[in-house]
Amino acid sequence: MRPVTSIPVALVPIVTLLWFAPSPAYACKESPTNASEMDDAPMDRAVCPPISCGPPPACSILNATPPFTRHSSTLIGPNPVTVGCFAVARNANDYHLLFNSEGGNFRRSESTDGGVTWGDLGLVSGLSAPWMGGTQCPDPHFSGTSGKMTLYFSATRTAAAGGSWTVARATSGDNGATWTTDLAQLVQPTASNFPYMPSAIELPSGGWLLAYAWICNGSNTAGATIDVLYSADGLTNWVPRAVPAISTGSCNTWDDGSANRPRMVLDPLDSSGQTIFMFYSAYEWDGTKVIRNCGRIGRAKSTDGGYTWVKATRPVFEPAVGATNWDDKQVLKPSLVFEPCPNNPANSFLRLFYEGAGTLANGGLGGLGIADAPWPFGSQICPTAQIALQEDLVPDDESTIARLTSVPNPTRGTTKIEVDFSRAQIAGEAELTIIDVTGRLVRQLWTGSSLSAPSSIEWDGRESSGKRVAPGRYLARMRLGDTTAGTHWITMTR
View 1 (tube, helix red, strand yellow):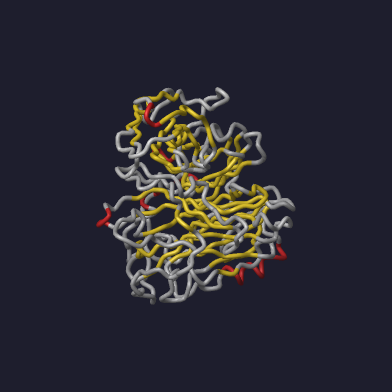
View 2 (tube, one colour):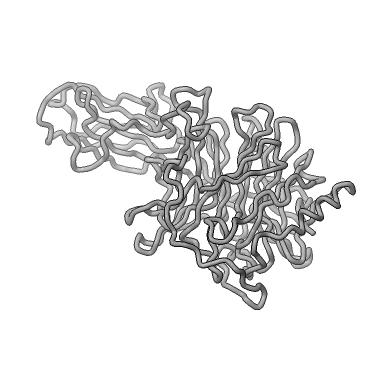
């Protein structure tokens, strides 16, 4: 029986029936030998028997009209250094990224441009307890704008504490720089299963929901289901709300191998907090191993506060198609934030951060990517979903009229922008401006005739007001009349 803390006696008979309901056609599968092997563990048939599903059909696009569109300004991937489990939290205009790092700890980064570029803030501190051996799979949340945060995460237990995995919680009052770990273990493992990859949300009516993958000892997340529990204080007395909430699909479907890495989000259009969406990783099973090149992101919906869930029949995000894409093998581990629409802040769109990987033909690189979707899916409330520059911006290439470069780049302060107007066929009024990734004018650096344009123009990294800009990406744009004549990206570091 899957354990939770302090289950009311009246719930035990119902919960027992739910917990022993079989997952479709699955038994335990291969076992990771340690935390670092969780994502890519070898088969161990002595521990776990085979299953009946497989082989799957060829990996292909299953959703011809997906709600998410890859972000045109994505800079996070490809990145040969994988971050493993990660999560993004949003606080006003700041974005905080936590991810697995060395020594069983988390590393954190910050972004001020919608998650396009990140500045490293180092390792976090304070994540420890007498029973804890290490951490993985963070799920951070902001409470208001005061810097208060709550973090749910997977934690290994020391041998003295019985080993295996549990779910833990920590709190911070300084935007995640330091943490205080609660001593309670939120969900206990059993001899056969353990909780992994938690996701929590605070309900408007009070209390917290906690979702996690319930994984068989001997499993590389294969055959995993997703459970949902409730606690009034987010720490103690967790009781089942949907166990399991999401199961693997039937054989020869796109999610017959696993349903794991849940991420819950409250629908901002429902003030009651009863409408909740869950996004999750899923992939197929071929009878011997997980086919990671078919890793996709699925979605489920609850309209009763997390008691019942209905899965979408098709994935909402899939690997890219084409030999030039860095994420054409798998897209997994969703993390999501709602963004205000650029031209209508009263409405929102949904931003997806995901881990992707490419085939060996594309270098086999992995990294983090971004995709955006209007909210609700398919709506025109926020038709321009991306926080990105307008399409009339000319890319930084050989076809531009004015060639721009800068040194140093990246920079912490002043950079010198070199201007080459030698290919201009006509003269006219020109201007060089700095704009951010939302298209907002940051500073006008120069204006005049293209015939008298200086060969170099300095930017001191400040806005028109004299305030230093935040770390992130900024575009130097040269216009000639009403035409964008040339562009050049400049990265400002902390």
